[in-house]
Length: 95
Image 1: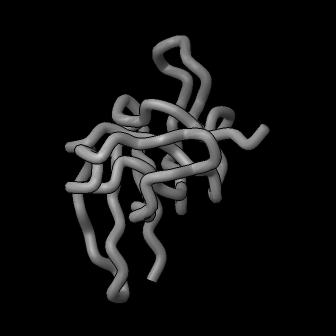
Image 2: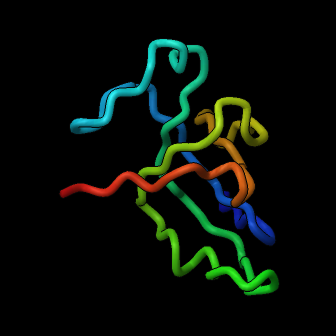
């Protein structure tokens, strides 16, 4: 089965690890992951003078999102989140 998010939403696979390179996520984040990998991107059109999602993110990117962001779903036994563009706080980039 394949999921295609609509509008400004992103399908994310949450990650359990709390360390990424030099980035340290606080212990409070252990309740619910706030870091994940982008699995699919919706069709976000430039309606508010901002760049479309496809220019900001790509499948495979690691992102940081709000602690209570998104809707939890299960697909083929795996947990995912569908989150809105406004809930994405940062993209983790390797140096």
